[in-house]
Image 1: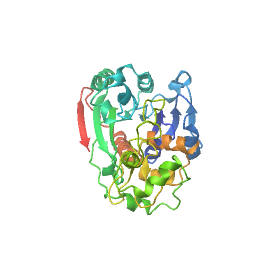
Image 2: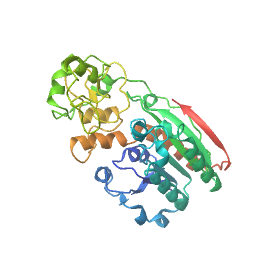
Image 3: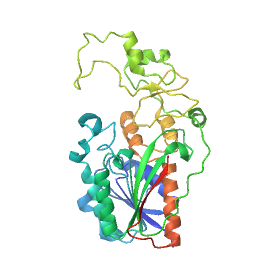
Image 4: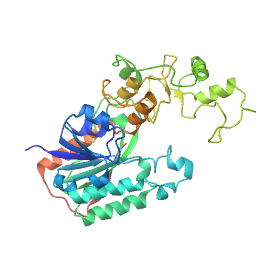
Length: 337
């Protein structure tokens, strides 16, 4: 009998790429059509519902695995926290997406349920997570908090993430066993970088040859351009000044967390192409992403890394097959960073 799964807020489908080797994915429950065409391209038979008010939850009751990737921006240092401070998450309207995930969880009653997010959801927003755990316990589930880093899953990226996992079956959490790699090793396997110039301001492009590895592009810009008298942009910053995240990658090491098109190639004087960042994020080079180039980078950065998702799904699949009940009040933290 095949194992079944349903995804919530999966967008371009990274989480599903990892889940699919272990489960038959029946549907995606979305709030909009953002990224959904990418999921459908990779999964033509997938049922997709684009508004929570139209989710046919009764139809999927009893599915083995429910997995979710709601917006992490309320907790991310690069999102609402940066603009509104450490407690900004408490007033962020996107918390409703998390609550919608729990509505689906309560209705479907899966054997296991997982939500992926940034680590700050587990640390800075711990009161919110604790409330979710209490709700899961009341529904008869144990809860495991799982902390991971993509670099430990055969990827050349430092990407720390958190999984909230509620489960009725015992899960045997085995540490990941993968060979380490580097940015250069991954890029050697990319046939077409997917680069279309210029991603950035042509003035910025002209400065790339002066940028050493792991060096901030903003610092180079400030060395060549006087910031006095340039005026301010709509966000209050200096006009023309590049974002602080932009830097040249060290090819012999790891890339930082991919959150957008902020990376200059380690040895070529250009920004990295979308296919290169796909590979560094654990996606196949030919995985189709919808929209314009800027939108594709955004879709990629919001997805779950498929190798990490596959490891998690494999752990859940073994637990589903063994079917050993777990104490509903059990709660633990597993740290594989």
